[in-house]
Length: 640
Image (cartoon, rainbow, N blue to C red):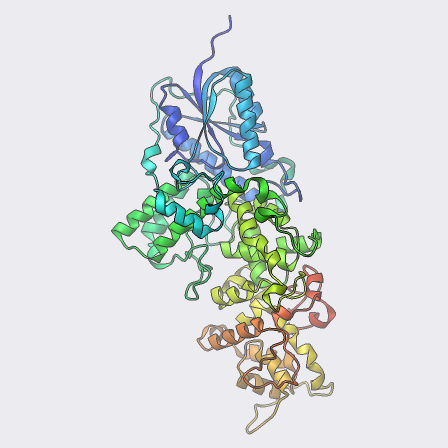
């Protein structure tokens, strides 16, 4: 006679609840007096699968490594409570539950709720296995969000009005809901000889990144476990590291009092979200459930009581609420967040492109637009770039390259260390897809991508948030020798081409002494040099000394400037001039400090860049631009 099977409860951990605090499913499983199996499945669908359109790894090496660390930490924390974590590798989740049913009688399975279609499909498969095998039921709990679903005064699945905008959602939630205490769902672990159950089929060791990714693993795109020297820090997965980061950021370093700006704070001209410590960077731990948003909320409240209440404490809660907006909004939106038309079934007036050359240049940070490229290179290396970088890159992909936005969303799904499906796909459709509407109705912009720069934020925000181009140069070291203005807008190096004919071919090559009295230089050549961020007087003298050769004049000016000169307050005027030049209407014919007349050659600004830039994304520069250089830097060769 076969021995009777043990009756157990199962806690099914997934990639969004890897913690032991504030865990409703864990608490419920341990409250019923039965032995508990704690299970995590490294399902090949998630870890060795590929995205639908582009075939990217669904989970890239950076996030895979983070998840391995998080699962290892979860195992350690359960062991500290006298329990163990059973893991399975290379087996589909449903098949794993089939095997579990063969070895035990499952009283019930406890897990967190999911929102999106692929996760819900796996959930249905598990439910079907339990039903077919005559086992207990699957119990699902809310716990990823700040506000509990049951405490909302509206049903996200049917109420459309709260999701017309983030503001509408925020007002509805703040007026009638409250944040539950994290202590309410704190598990009390069973103790005793029969409390801990270790499944005999569990893995004996943790797999490696290569093991999990299988054929999708590519060593050339795996940055490895070490911190990149350009990154602020490297995330280590797990609840222990998450709680330590909260302690350090809020309490030890007091960043809410001095440094915090916030991921979505882009409009305040006095603050830059590109500085180190300007963001909490807790998002990878929140996305994987290593940190409860309610616990973080309580720590911020405690900070307000014990230290100070300020804009930073308000803003970090605002960003937790934004997570709820996209999470609950995805319930309302359903599968529309994965479809080409997005939330509102919107379509551009031009056909979507799937050009692989442009897509690869965008992915690799080789578009030729530094404020896009710096974020994309950071993303590829670390699995992270800030919210502003994600938006600007998304707008550029859609509005300026015209590429199917879902291809960009799939790339983010693959490489983001803080990927969570609603945060990624809902944000693409809610924040980025509206870029298809930028164009003729807004005045001087063109309807079709590639005619003129439509994402003007990459100029405005680049100057506001990275005035000295330090962040750009950190991730685009080839731009390091350039002054800030030109590092942000290197295409300015080609502006002298229209005026070079004025210099003639017989000018001397030597630099002559500075003028001692009155002198004259060509106004259009002067305008071109001034547009690169130099003062009118120094540009005029340099042109005189170089026989009105604009390239030689710029080289001379750069040679006379050391790095300290780039940082002084005098450059602020140059930066403001650069902004006005970059953003001026192509037809405005504004003068530069009165130096240029209506007859002067028009200084090409970024938004007037001709269509050729689009055909050169990621490739060689066109002939009329490729020869422009500053010292050893060659525009079009050292950088697209």
